Length: 260
Image 1 (spheres, one colour):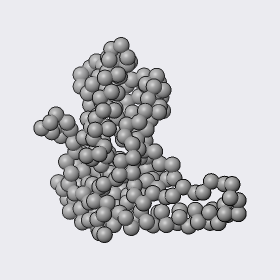
Image 2 (image 1 turned 120 degrees about the vertical axis):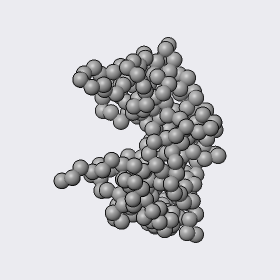
Image 3 (image 1 turned 45 degrees about the vertical axis):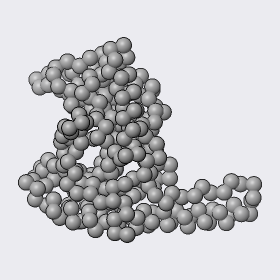
């Protein structure tokens, strides 16, 4: 079986908007100031991801020499996000309707909470991609998704690309996350503080002991109640911007109201 070609692009929900940027910038600045301090965790500053790179990845794709990118772009343009969201919320509303009828018989019970008419994202907490928290390399914040609507929406969009043969099937479930820290971006042989490199025949990536850090930021809010505005196809490899930030090149994108 031929090896899968390396990914060149990814499908995502961008998290940076005019509403979210001030929140994210403030939260990341506070986090960076804390964890990079030698008196705190001594994490190299390069490991902290720039504001402009934050997104929720739905899946990755491979387009060598951009072959197949046009097809992916055209498929993206056919999506009707509100319709997808409606297909998810509709059945949930029916369930709530049944629950409401039952609750009508008991007026002392609280009425069901209204379901959201739009998708919004709140990022809270900090988790490690690695099971060994003392040897972490990637830390992320998960979106708060109490009723699972965001997860189902993202899975539906991803499945559309998989069924079209544009995105490969994956055995592992979709883990929605915004990467906050990634030591792969740290250059050189030495980290600082809790960071260390594993020595061997080839240079291993820097790892950090994140146990205390995860405890400290377990309930930290990075951004709150920010509406999802777009779905995008981006090229891998964030690029420096004129303002000093970094961002991924957007190959194609649609608004949440696309097709309405």
